[in-house]
Length: 587
Image (cartoon, rainbow, N blue to C red; front, side, top):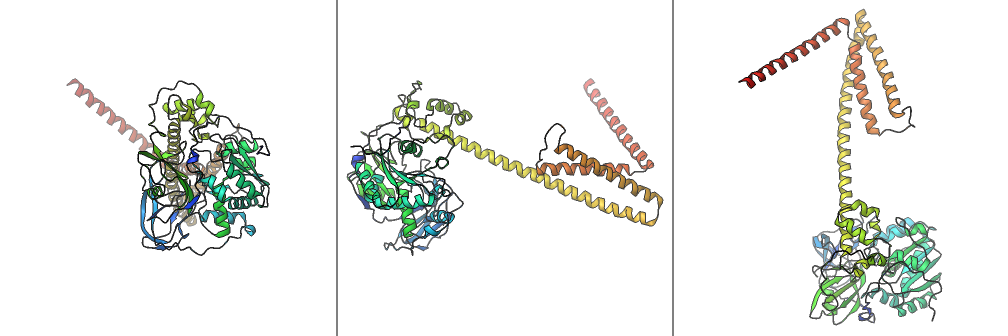
């Protein structure tokens, strides 16, 4: 049976690892019970962490804002249930870095009492206000990237096609599959909201062909959604769920390097994100929970609607960890990472926990030298050259890595999956990116230090100039008093000073013009600070020359005699010193 109304245009590369989705795909979404505690991180997106709004001992309600957004690339943090704030401090994050971040620990009171909620009138609000509201509701991308969703709502009319990402290409993970089966109406309601906010004409829902029940449920919901939408079934091929690859599959549009999809008239949202947008705008509910798959070596694999901050060890108790487990993977086997411990709060990026057993996850074999077989390049969906990027990383040629478009790498792991030498290529790419970011931070810090130094110099020169101007003003007052007394000598000296100052000012203007507009070059603007330093130096020189010109012949002769005397004294001292050195050598 033909499922698609349009041709699917495949992308370059890709791999097809064992899916293992059957373990949890038949398990309906179940609500996870209230945990013993909730460790809610203030950093809930790829941007800045939220600003703390509560104190230890405060009683909070479900949905209450406990951290305000800090800047444009940031979202608010909320209490997932009602209870008491028992601690505020550093806590380990569910993140590849294993670093700690500020978090709020809440002990639930068991009442699960909500704050007052009300729908948001988004239909009659400005887009800017809607964006701010979604930011304040903590809505981020729930496909794993946790990019602040409000930043993807561009000005109306710029986007013509909305891509609804239901591909879920990672093995083992089935939370999006179950959401499309059970919450298709809410996903389409969120799609309709985003479609109207963007001014797009159609919504294309991309689903891999290993999820026929999800595709059928979404098609059924489309019949009553009230806007143009279409389900497009794509071949099961990892990483078809990556934004650029799915856009290519559904529309044939290839988003070039360094270009955003919105510039090509396309925007992509995960199905879970669209559902969260619908709940936020139509019900006033902030993003305080997500659906997560618990699978692998467990007795009860399934999908659970869990609160953000719920300890992972308590969630795994719902699935029942079997004996013989060798590790815990957060996320899918291709892009996930090993959990260092389980007493960590669930994050908004956490779509899956895989309990590993040796049969499915054997120890990684030892790395062997690269044989330049080219299989990594064949598998790369971005059409990069992973073997060259690997050598650049080994040689710390980070400049070459950037030239070879390292930052286009989506770290999907397809290259490492097919590498016959078992080289962990993605780890090398992450290392290169981190080093480049570190160099960029150091460069910015050096620029700030240079700017502070130049400003200090500018301030010191300005103060010296102002002091000279005050001295000159007092001298001018004295001369004016002398002129007023009627002394011809003083009048003559004042006239000379005035003439010298006029000549210095004229010369200064000529120099400034030459500095700003060379004869052979077009007019350019000097840096304001540099121009100010040049001006101060010219004024100082002009004042010194004016003072010299104002001297009488007798004063000039006396100053010249004093100068000659100093020179002769210096020569005599040097000769005496040299004579003493020669005597020491002779002895």
